[in-house]
Image 1: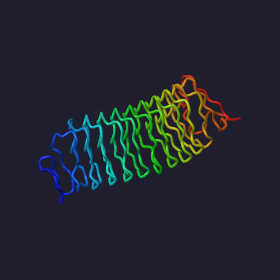
Image 2: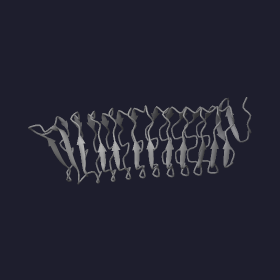
Image 3: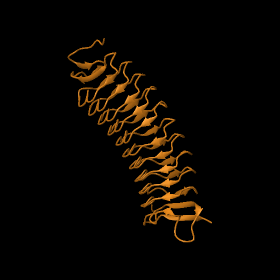
Image 4: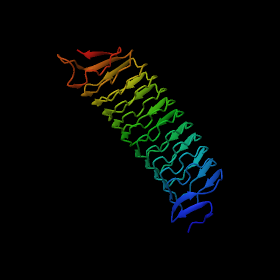
Length: 286
């Protein structure tokens, strides 16, 4: 039996369906296991929320557009944060995710424009498409060990992101994952990473150092296009695919290829426009 104010909270079983109050600080009643769809969405009066020890799931759009929400006190019982749960929470600055958390949904923190830091525990195994895109104040982040895929658009438009640690478990960098991360200066891809997706680092204009994995096999279209500060990159011998304009708009770039240049043309699956047409040059192994 959950004890709660029946005016403030609409609760069905263990699901909080709706919050009807206007308090600036809310403690969700013990016994609630899930915060339902849109339960607090658009509550501009909400500044701080505290979750109960019973809570397992933060539901779809649960706190979407809570424009003044600046403090979320997570409990060590939560396993899932669903799609758009905290999207457009423009005052949220620091997030300490619990060690119990397993999955983060699509757009979960998208456009939290004041968000500066997020602690992601190693319990997290899945971070979905675009979960943190548009967080332009985010400065640095360390992705959890065990994460195998850096999903599409994950940090797209995080203009303040200067430092990223990609875990050794990562096998691929998704399409547009770090596009327009204009403060990012260096990237080290771990040994298991084989794929760099389409536009993955496009327009990272401060990027000066990129270390590809020796096991890289594919570099997508526009992967490093517009990385104007990049002066050199080494392409491992195992790379079999480089798509169109992968290094376009990198006028100071020299690409050092470990493979030997074929007598005619390029390696079979390298697009003929892989360098673009504005100054990047290739140096081939002899």
